[in-house]
Length: 137
Image (tube, rainbow, N blue to C red; front, side, top):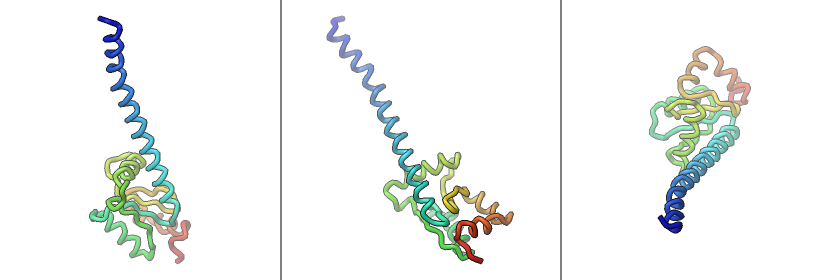
């Protein structure tokens, strides 16, 4: 084999590996950017809900808080151009496959529907809301 053909073969063998590395790096970087965005948005209000507008559980979560006299800030992921990436970041944060609804109170992650309802039932939700300044009574 001539050295010119060998160089071409080497070039073609290396290229897919380097391009997949670049893709992986870009994907990880985008995930970090979305995670930072989630954290930033979650800390801007006393109660923040990440939601999808057509999700019945998300609607139930918003209704729960509004019924308690809380006005949550709601981020509808399906109406955000980077919503899918944010949803992946939330799934990573939660460590499971269901990402919405996700609730933050006082900038701290409370969790998905099951955690919020468990907190409501065991009586720890109202104190969290008061501490965050979302409830005054």
